[in-house]
Structures are given as structure tokens and as C-alpha cells.
Length: 125
Image (cartoon, rainbow, N blue to C red; front, side, top):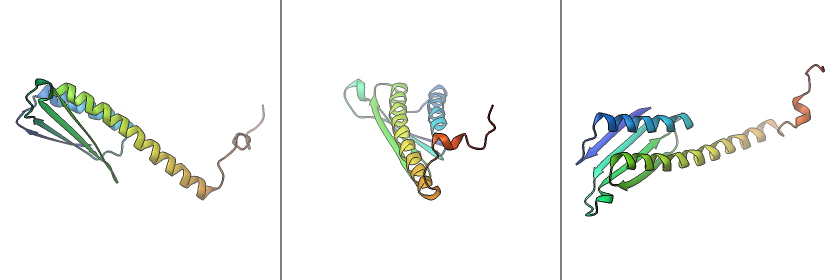
């Protein structure tokens, strides 16, 4: 997975970048089809200190782009909340994709095997 980090008004240090990489690697385990991840980090203009950092992450797959955004006081809490939101999106996406693939396979190959069909051809003990 290619990682592209863009920052505006805030420079992430090496530990922040390794934290981002660790969170995105976890997402890649769930969905290996992720080809590129774009991370945008901005210092917000909010007066309250709780919403000063904005992080948005876009995961690019073959046919879709999954996005999430968060505003919080620190970069790490933003990355954690965005990664959690993207994890939910990845699970929904995988469920839809795999269910539609199974439906297509079922149409092509006929009916799915029954439990009686699975044991056919095996020697009895």
C-alpha cells in the first residue's frame, strides 16, 4: 500500500507517522485490495482547543474510495478515531462485496452444496 501524507500548518514527527502507518496496516489486513492511502493533516482555525487538528484519510481500492474525517485536540486521537470509522466502513464494504460475489457464483454454478453433498465421495470409516 502506498502512503501519501499531506500536512498544512502542522508537521507530523516520525512517531506520529509510525502511528499512522501502524493503524493503516491494521486496515490493510482486513482489506488487502487497498492500493493507496491519502492522509490529510490540517491545523484547524477553531477557537476551542478540542477541535484544532483535522485529519482525513482516504483509502483507494480498485473501484471505491473509503473516506473518514475527524476533528480533535491531538493528532493521535484523530488518527485513532478515523481508523475506527474506516474499520467499520471496510467491514461493511467487504460484506457487500463478498455477498455479491457469492450470489454471482451461486447463479453460475447452480445451487450451493447441501451438507449431504459435502460428504459424497469420501470413504466411510
